[in-house]
Image 1 (cartoon, rainbow, N blue to C red):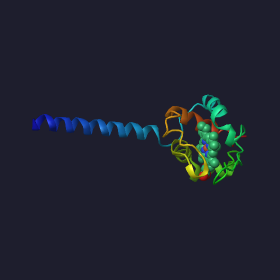
Image 2: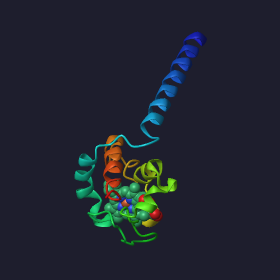
Image 3: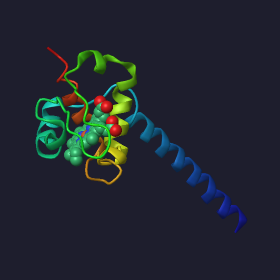
Image 4: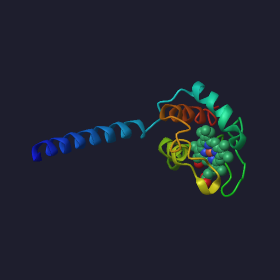
Length: 124
Ligand code: HEC
């Protein structure tokens, strides 16, 4: 009894650590997205608040949507891909930005694709 319980605990711990490693590799650093695929999602789910050209300026309940055409802003490490990923995953609820990832409405790969598309706005 005790031994099988221990074996279960060890197996469980191993699975948890594999899961954590997989989650980390999928959610840090530069995006691995496809901008064209991201554009399709963006057009249906994001343009109402972020505008088709990414210029934003739409204010709901807090901060307005930012301008992704502002190359200087987008080059700031504060607004790196980890930051964008966190916003799309967990939202900015006070400002009206939806927690797309956390609520399961957008999948991790689609979040990567959206970030790739967002990055095209500041490029000349
Ligand atoms: C209902 C309006 C609304 C919709 C729809 C919406 N957003 Fe937002 N989003 C916001 C607002 C407002 C902010 C600013 C939040 C803040 O800074 O407090 C924001 C911020 C963001 C940010 C942080 C950007 C930055 O540079 O600071 C990202 C990334 C983002 N949205 C992605 C998306 C994506 C991708 C979609 C579509 C799947 C989407 N948003 C749909 C309202 C919206």
